[in-house]
Image 1 (tube, helix red, strand yellow):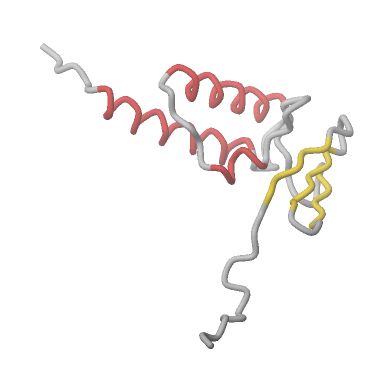
Image 2 (spheres, helix red, strand yellow):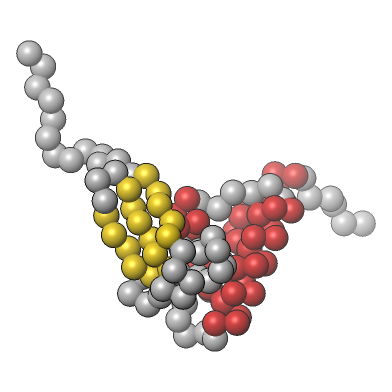
Length: 111
């Protein structure tokens, strides 16, 4: 008789599969319809097992059309004062993400 997997084991396996699907969808070698399907499956897995993909993975999915955003291909990336601006070249949707300059090299001296 097979042993039932615990909730944490299921989540760990799901997060590994989500990462593989996202990596597949960012690969330009495969047709676009397969890459879109991989993103849809990754989203379903994350919702079913309540697993959040890493923040970097969310940057590379258009929130309007669901296309995988590939830098240099179908996305324009700009840096603003405190934001990353991703513009999808397929649908024209603009996604803005905050960022901070960490360890900019200037340390404050104690006076």
